[in-house]
Length: 329
Image 1 (cartoon, one colour):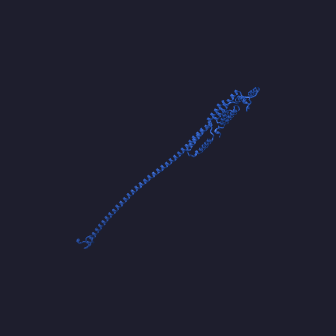
Image 2 (cartoon, helix red, strand yellow):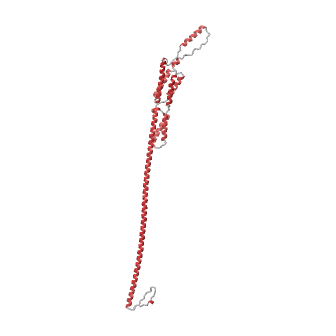
Image 3 (cartoon, helix red, strand yellow):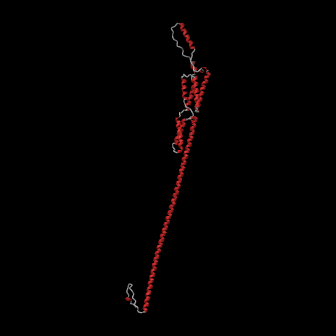
């Protein structure tokens, strides 16, 4: 048996001395036991290492699983955010489309409104033009028609729609034509005719001027005898009894006082007819009546009288007026 005191320390090699077969068997047994212990120790150590590795692996797997879970959660959150953003984009696109539709509808409604405004304005202008046309045809109110056209032109000038261009041109042409047309004041002209009608009673007849006694001859002193002076006076007296004058119309001398009344009344009726023709803008009848009146006055009334000359001058001015209908142009 080896001595234990002589064994080296710190894992020194063991030297076994064989004393016989038993010693060899015992050494083998010890070696076997030592090998078995070392194997067990190594097995335990290996198991521990495997458990540690397995534990580390499981931890890594858990960490990886946890990371995957976190990544999956982040990915899910990102997907949810993308879904929300896409939904918001879709909502914005739908809102933009709805706004575009509303804008188009608003523009369409505005165009319809403008179109309706233009149509309403054209209808209003047509109504005023009809009124002005009736005034021109019925009463010849030229100034009223010009005022109406100027008002319509002012209203239309506020709009620039192409549809109104033909209306503006037509109104401008009519307005220029009316302004260039001589204006006849119907009311003032009718009053002038009425004054002529009133002055008819004061016009002297040709017969009145012919039958007016002439100036008495001036007696001059004669140095002849009494018989010569008496003869001269008698001869002058005989000459004063008869007066010879030249007459352009013999009919003026043949009328009676009753016929004179009818002549004056006929002139009044002619002037009344001329005034009615004036109100109707019947220029043909108006001129015909005034021509007949002028011929009658020149035939039966004293044209050398200042009253007659003034009356005929006023009549000539009335004849120069253009009282035709506006629609005749």
